[in-house]
Image (tube, rainbow, N blue to C red; front, side, top):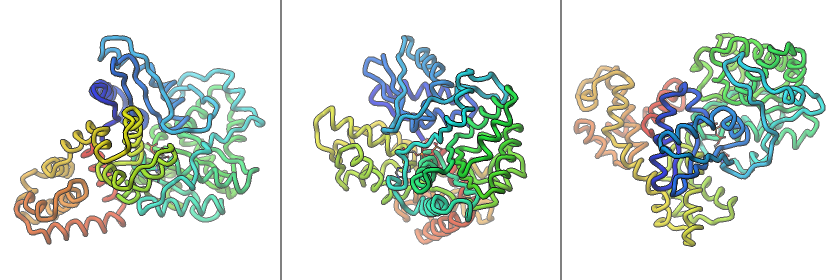
Length: 462
Ligand SMILES: Nc1ncnc2c1ncn2[C@@H]1O[C@H](COP(=O)(O)OP(=O)(O)OP(=O)(O)O)[C@@H](O)[C@H]1O
């Protein structure tokens, strides 16, 4: 998946910057903080605006990555560049967050922040009140996660504790956990709710460790009614953090407080996290959020353009949704481009206008997702020869990757079943249909396969 989109020639500058950072940063950091960014570059390259999904991320990126991004851009362009970070969507202001940095027990934060964090009267829930159930579009992709989250917000501390929500980037995990907190607070304004990103939790452990304030730390975390914690894969390799989280976890469950977690993978797929914690994560309900299906993408586009005060005709929404398939953040990026293009050119939103506004993105996609590309990627992933994609061989170690590749070809390209059959060594279209149905059904039930397909889809989408 392209890491972000900029207009016109700025695209290549931003893409070059992304490529550079992908090489330099640890993969997890890159995927979480840099990859989801979208960018706009002015025609003279003097200013780059980065759009960030929420306030927490904005503060974190400003503190941890902004100067590095600016330096990379300047190096690539050879001139000073002004870097600006803005929220992708309108959002209520929240207080700035700590700038403490990883590794786990690194430098201490400013004393002023300590005082603020430690003050009981200054307890802040860090919820973004703009992220609610009302503006979270429902579809097959998030139905189960949404229903479970709704249930938790209505009767916390009972079923589905902890609730573990996982899925790829930009699919609405953060939105969903904020919605849980906002709904609970609307029903019970006195409830003690906290939303926190896992990296911020790590920072809090660091502070407590350095300042020997574990009592305050425990007061803060062990007394919550609802703990919402985002991206727990960030606990990997952070032993002290994992221990403290384990303690908080046990304390909260014992007093029937609720815990909702998100992650980019299902619990057993987490790496470098202690087994006892992984088994706790999996002890309530684990639900996936899938990439949104076509109708859901259309509904999201229409809803979001209304929120921005514009009307997107259904046929345009279908056109965009058919071409932007990976995640909701990418849809939002596409929508922003279309709205800006329509305003600048004072033209009504039409398919033609959308095509022009998204021309870079569309050409990238058309270039990337071909059946040949899918065959190569799947063959590499399962360590078989590309030639086996067309061969008549039948051992399961070959037949299965081949079926997976057929399924992805149907999902990710516009090719018909007979066309796909042809490209897989002249197979009949019923063979392709059988493969597509089989893998689709299995995907619903077998977490491991689902996870593998996510990885393949992300790889293919660039
Ligand atoms: N079903 C939906 N309806 C409306 N908006 C959505 C939906 N799903 C996601 N969004 C929006 O898409 C954007 C990305 O969602 P969010 O930040 O929650 O993703 P995420 O899964 O937490 O991704 P990451 O792991 O990258 O943080 C947000 O602006 C969110 O409001």
